[in-house]
Amino acid sequence: MRKILLIIILFCGLYSLAQNNKEFKSKNQNTEKKYIEKKINYNRKVYLFSKVENVPTTFDCTSVNKEELRKCMEENIKNSIVDNLELENEIQQLEFGKYRLSSDFIIDKKGNVINIKVQFYKIGSNKTINNSIKEKIIELLKKQINELPKMKPGNQNGKNVNVFYSFPMTFNIEQ
Image: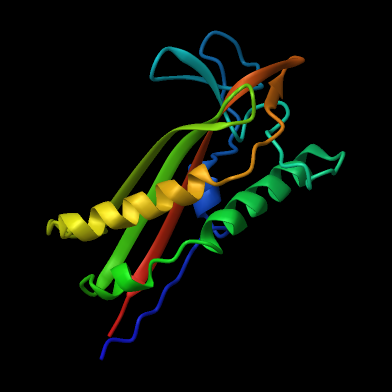
């Protein structure tokens, strides 16, 4: 019988990969950019979660400090998704190895979660994952993301903006 070890790495490095907090220098000037804009589908102007002036928030994140608000939101999103994500049956059907389940979505100007994209793959392997298992895992994650509560929208220069958020999870299945 397999022993399943589910390790979700969310704080130690993955947030730094998903929400890169490095400041970028302008090629023409030596001044730091305060935010980065991204064009994602339908020509929407989208700000990265790590760069937007005021992050989208759930109504239970009330800190005045912007960094504390950012951390509170990351924690709320993680808890909302991970605590309710039930993958036990699907994981038992996977081969041993390391897997990545990553999702990207936009929190729009009204505070709704839109444009959800999910990828699931085995790290370091060319083998494909059984499509029915893969589709079920992707469907379950999308469902959890869709159930995130409506949020207070992100804000840049006094205006509500679309905010891009990336949520990666990595887990191992061992004997």
